[in-house]
Image (tube, rainbow, N blue to C red; front, side, top):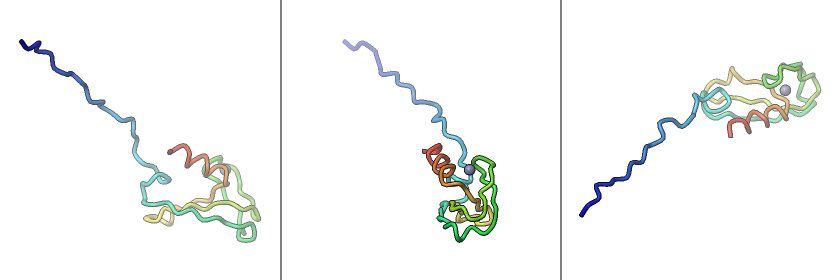
Length: 87
Ligand SMILES: [Zn+2]
């Protein structure tokens, strides 16, 4: 006597994954270089907080290897936050 009952497991339709951004692989591996204070000769705008990174302040520069022109200078803390956001 079969019960006719079969497992009815639905696959989850979506993973909630969104398209990768520049900093999560859109343009390949992102290489992060640490800029020492003596190397920071210009003022940059950090894309994480839109605040200035003044000359003479150590920071990170993130370079997408497939699009090095899109490199951006980040405060250390802002970059850490960006990386954590994407897991
Ligand atoms: Zn910042």
